[in-house]
Image (cartoon, rainbow, N blue to C red; front, side, top):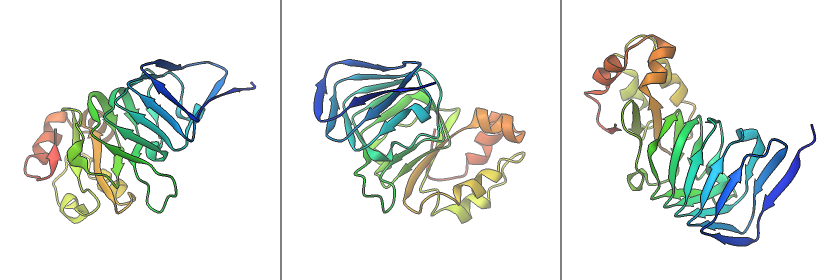
Length: 202
């Protein structure tokens, strides 16, 4: 199937609702695009969205179809609120990247995140989702500490996964519900293991 390119670039869009959901479309949020006070609705998989140095400010991003393995690091996000399910997504400034990505003052409290990383940013400006999601601050720097926790089931495997994250990873958000099903542990057991750990938000 041939896809139609839908491109937004070289303009400022204020107070509009943009729906990215066409079955035959490939969406580009390109250079010199500013979305301000907008609602951005995503109904397509990550492979059908490309972001290149767009700025999304004070907007709501509604993820209607689970967004997997999408790298927001080529976008600058400020004052945005996210809803929906995001899995394996990266936010912030990717190390050594020429693209001017970043994230600050964003709110994920109404979203469901699993394996989402926040890189090269100030995590204290972000609002993370509540339990059963939990957020580990400075995970790479604290790998040794994390490896010594008596994780239930096979949840300790996540520490090996975190070791592959960039050194500048400020935070990673995980879902106890997803981890529990995948690695044979209850949400309560995971929460108990996290109980003695500093630098965790839930």
